[in-house]
Length: 122
Figure 1 (cartoon, rainbow, N blue to C red):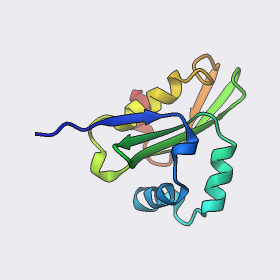
Figure 2 (figure 1 turned 135 degrees about the vertical axis):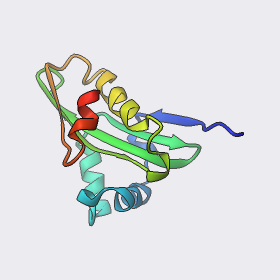
Figure 3 (figure 1 turned 60 degrees about the vertical axis):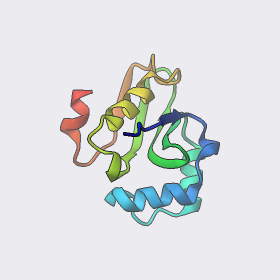
Figure 4 (figure 1 turned 90 degrees about the vertical axis):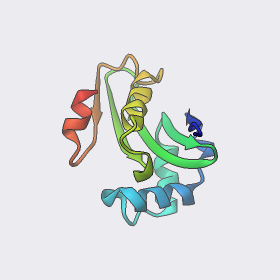
């Protein structure tokens, strides 16, 4: 039995935009049609940006925007379908909330369409 080597990374430079676009197209109906240029701009204007990797394979992603004091919004939480159900989504959101730019923010919002019950548990 092999164990997965899952790593979380807060360096947006590690992300290859084409891989992120593929991940979105695979598992996020609300992100269909996002362009590489648009994703580059979104990432450049977000901090933190957290990616999840198994070896060199991008398997999860999320980003946030914040004023670091009063409000923050978490966007684009995605986990590759092959890796769902093992807690990566929860850990990804918890990693975002623990990031120094979000950890002391008064109120954090998470943008989601259909997964409200999942995120309320966190």
